[in-house]
Image: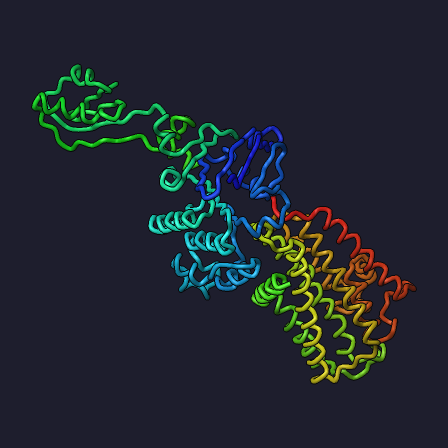
Length: 305
Length: 255
């Protein structure tokens, strides 16, 4: 069942085409990710779907309903906004109690506090929390209604690596319970680890949409094999089946190529020639490489924008 | 209803954690009558038209309490909530959006009412404060005055986006009203120019109405030969206009 359907979504701010004709769907139980540089239109898209922003053009259905200005829908979907600050002088347990009162069957907030290691802070004011703890609070508030669809906009920004892994586990748990998650993220590793399908979005358009595995397989990007050895004949290396390019730097060889047998062919050759090699590593393209080749940006630049 | 009740509880707790608002609502008016009542006592004097100084001061200080809640606390809280995207976060829940604003009106009204009760009790115990008016008329005046000042606060929250600007504007409106409306200093003893300025301040009409309905007399009016009705009409007009513009322009969040 399709729980989110978007057809030709457009949103313009004056001359700027923030979202310029996006279409996709999300299946029930899926973890769907949207990645892209800042200003690509991720937040505009997610907020149109959440019904918080008015779109200029296109159709959106969330759980079969029009989301814009649809209060009833907020009983079944839940949202973590990219940035919310809460009242400075509200205590953690107070805000949890308040949000619990909004829903018919809220999850037990003490268990959620435990899960995210915030239980000891339940009597603290929000202003005493660190950035990461505030982020956890935002996520807990989004989890309270035990929603059918969970929207997470930049969910692990500001979380330490441990907390990020915990968060991933939690989303996988949600998935096992048949819940749908829609997320945007800056971290390619996160999208690759977590998402069933990923949409890469740039300048208001989807430029690729598939499972991380297929995105990598179909990207045309090559694997690389790196090792150190002596007395190497580069011309012979280049003739090995599947190899496209070979680089030598000091004693370090980097071989680029494709195909399931690439590593076997290279190693067979090295044995045949009785060439000693050490520190052999292989590297496959990851989502980040795909992203870079598609958006033409250096990822670090994007992150620091 | 449960949702609204929980929201009220939280908003009221948060309001009680705002030192300045609580101080001016509950403590400041009592300090003032302790000081002035301590100096002049509450014996009827000619200067106060045959009333005791505390009897005259108490209805004036109600203006102070209403103003701190309506012109400072209410708009600044709403602007802060919007700036921090708390309003937007609330919008993404099943909570009715109008409850968010209603709750701010209610909790500030309750604090204003507490201020009135506390002031009355202290005045009664220490200075034998007297109420000469009609309870029903006074209640009506109290509710209308609160609504009209709160509507001005709502208007500030609707028109101003930036919290610091809102803060500045709230102070610019609040302090002149405090001193020129008769709320803290008797208008009767002010030069003519000040009295003219006072005629343009909504709080002036409120203080006047409070004095009239508390003391059951019209001797404190600015000698414009106006009546109860005019005071009330002016406040109704302000309330209506401010609510109208606010409802048309209020934004829950900016994209």
